[in-house]
Image (cartoon, rainbow, N blue to C red; front, side, top):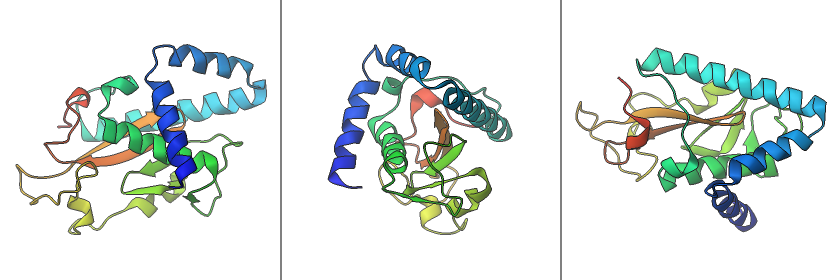
Length: 181
């Protein structure tokens, strides 16, 4: 990530943690051209549906809304960096050449932070189940022992049309998000 993208990510984080952030976002949404707003709303709705369906497959717990302040810094910044990388054009996209001007559900993974893909290309985030990468915590970088009491818990978070995947060890797992069953 370039220095200017890092600065943008830190500024966006500061804005997200401000209590007025939701109101500013809603105001920006209201001033967007109607056609773009409709496409963005549809992309966000579809991304939300996909996230809820995926959540039902891995957990009995219902998905829920969290504020940026409820997320640990490593996760919040990882999501913001993926978003800034995509929106600035500084990262890679799948061959379908995703563009912020054409809203659709998009996906990123903290283990490949400069790659954003469409739903058809989620396989680009696949890790071999027995690989070291599949057992590495996205927060602290520790390679887990692959035992029942020392493994990686997968998770997903959504911001707008962007769904971000991550894996965390027990020490780094965000307590506010709960542990999938």
